[in-house]
Image 1 (tube, rainbow, N blue to C red):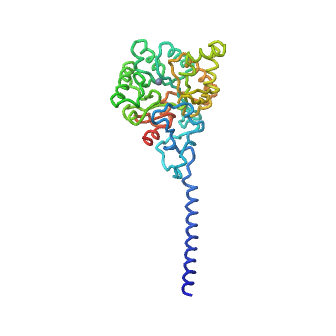
Image 2 (cartoon, rainbow, N blue to C red; image 1 turned 90 degrees about the vertical axis):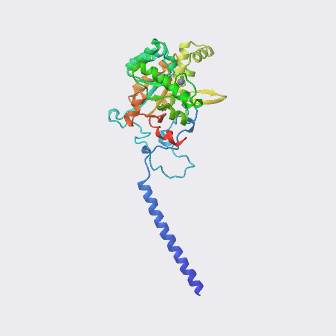
Image 3 (cartoon, protein in one colour; image 1 turned 180 degrees about the vertical axis):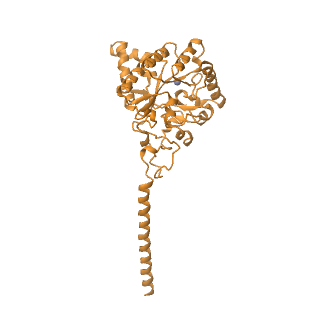
Amino acid sequence: MKIQKTISITTIVISLSLIIYMCVMMTIDSGNNTTSNPTSDNVISHTGTPSGDVSSAVPTGSVAPTTPLQTAAVPSATKTPVPTQSTVTAVPGGKTSTNPNYAGKKLISITFDDGPHPYNTTKVLDMLKSKGVRATFFVLGENLYSETQKSFVKRAYDEGHEIANHSYDHPSFTSLSADQIKEQLRRTDDTIKSIIGEVPVLFRPPGGAYNQAVSEQCGKAIVLWSIDSRDWEHLSARNVKNYATNHGISEEEAKNILIDEVLFKGFTYTVSGKQYTNPAIVSLLRHGSIILFHDIHPYSGEAAGKLIDYIQSTGEFEILPVSEMIETEQRSPQAGDVYSYMWETYATKKQNW
Ligand SMILES: [Zn+2]
């Protein structure tokens, strides 16, 4: 009898405890739903950064997510329900600028690497001038020996373009010593300063290859890209010539077809026997995009010009040099930052070493 009574009391106590526990859990649950579920607009994932960017891989158009940045967030293995803080105070992945000067506009940057080139850079500068667009030029120190070569940088700077450092002679930075990294940057900085009186604040490592040592030793903000035109291959003089021969058409026609693919249709390419897709640039454009071209190739300026025509015809975009674009919504780019979009910065810097 006594045992039965004890069991009954125990059962009642356990049942009551369960009911109280469930009530408490429901309260906590509803509290979470109302207070800590962030909107996609104010969260940037510090763990969802494309890992390929961090070590040595070349970011390509296929790396760029076709969906907005905020959806490329927490990996499924992570059980943390929501990120609790972000070091980025802007609106990562926002659809348009929050800066009153560019209200309602999508900001993008067009960049040109590996120059200057005596003939092709001039064509690019003429094109940009005619369309009233300012870009960012990542120049190589080895291309700045003669006064003529230097004059392209001077002209670009005087016409409002940003001059940035792309190393001295284009080595892969992840295989350099700390001293070699600094020397590559310093030589090019010194020459640029002698031409325009300023030292660049941005560095683009050749091939996009960087690691912690590169980030720490370069002394600049690293800028990669979110959209790769692959102009160096698809629009090279050789590819245009081959395409014309293979299809029995003129080089002029071949060039137009290939530019059309780069900008509006997309194309496939093969690396080590594996096929990749480079989506049409216009399909990837969004607020914060950084687009990669090379001003040393003969048809890159024309391709960039047609892209600018399209961008301007939409009325949706404002094209700015990289530093200026970043400054409109964040602090100025600083040493140790890494950008491949406007916002992908502090995130990449510290989380993945
Ligand atoms: Zn390069």
